[in-house]
Image (cartoon, rainbow, N blue to C red; front, side, top):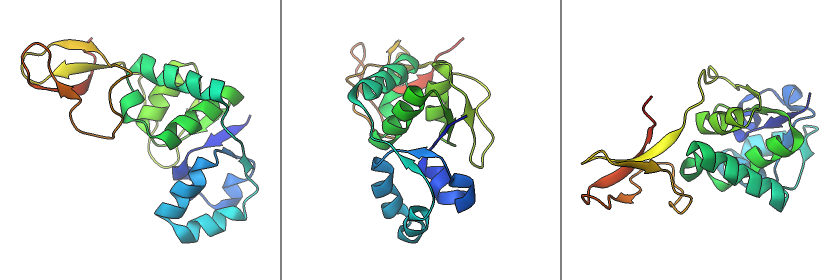
Length: 165
């Protein structure tokens, strides 16, 4: 079965283990920024660099939106998710947000070094003051951390939290 490799695999796996993996061109810049020496080494690996199609990227955003993971995924993460969805491949990543979104869509994941996620979570926006909740909006700015804005009810900061059962 084909495997889509997240940047963590490119950074940490032996080159021979990367052979045949599918990667997005946007990962090259990320890899060069994180480890220029490793980027040179990865160039020698027999990887499949595939462009991300607009329909696949839309599907990835919709998938991440459905779980509430979209605000916490980078553009590179979305490219990797789009490739995995399009190829119906195993997604190799240690990123729990990526694992969550892909497993919610029915995909299978493999970890790079960490233990894989055991559960699929749905995230929601929750006010830190009054506790008001809502679905994570696709209009929320995408960043790895921080508040999402202010509560419409009480004005307190709103954050992303796992939906309570």
